[in-house]
Amino acid sequence: MKKVIVVAGPTAVGKTALSIELAQKYNGEVINGDSMQVYRGLDIGTAKITSEEKQGVPHHLLDIRSVDEGFSVADFKQLASECIDNIIHRGHLPIIVGGTGLYLQALLEDFQLGQADESAELSAKIRQEYQQYSQKHGKEALWQLLAQTDSLAAEKIHFNNERKVIRALEVWQLTNRSIFDPATKPQKRYDDFSIALTCAREVLYERINQRVLLMIEQGLVEEAKFILQQPTSQAAKGIGYKELLPYYKGESSLDEAIATIQQNSRRYAKRQLTWFRNRMAMHWYNLLQEPKQKQELFVAIDQWLNQ
Image 1: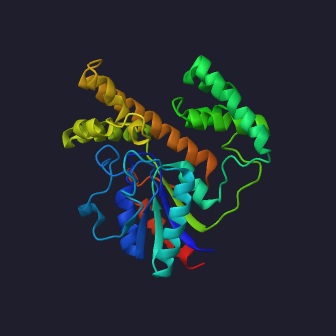
Image 2: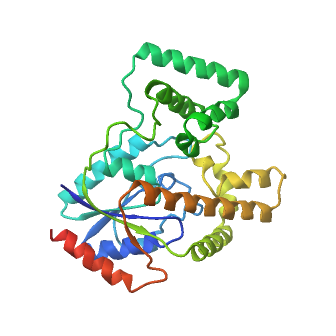
């Protein structure tokens, strides 16, 4: 099986710095595994790596979509697979870096979302019923139906994304399973060494709070104003952007918007940690507080590469 390294973990935990060090040490190329960094113009709010920080290391799947375009798990899986093949063909080591757990799991485990053995006619009927329900009661009421039947899907799908909410309800009704929990156990596609970075919760939360303040200094408010000109886009729903909308409307102060960004970023980091602990097999390291673990990591990678 093709060997790939994965560097995952919550926001603000040091993934970027480690990925550059690994790429330099093991002749690697980096593949972005963050769902928002694929968008051009979302630089500050996504903490996208800069040209200087890349230190000459090739990076892939950054800035490949405009903010008015969509980008799905299937898109990522296809493009990342092609990148892996091309990188290996060049004799280099693919290093996938990001915190979007669903993307990483879909790529590594051939994770098939929402597959069901259903007739097209029945599916169409179910979709029509839920569309009519949404028109009569509203998108949030439709999402509440999902929350009552498939809490896993409701946690991951925004109530404004009517199409995905209806698809999740459809899959549940047809299979009695979550769209995020296929009946067939996924098979590993790669020989991966998957690293999850972590640290003490209070340390992580303080780093997140400080990162948000730095983003504000770097111009996040202006960047968000540009993004929010496309209010229905997938990009505009990202943390760091959507929270500034009430500020632009005069409904909150900038300080209140900043506090909300910090709070939502902390909550997202908690969800990221939960995903990687519960749904993926990871090698856990706390390099921020235990820097000596880095040498242990390098030894483990050396052994894995030589297997």
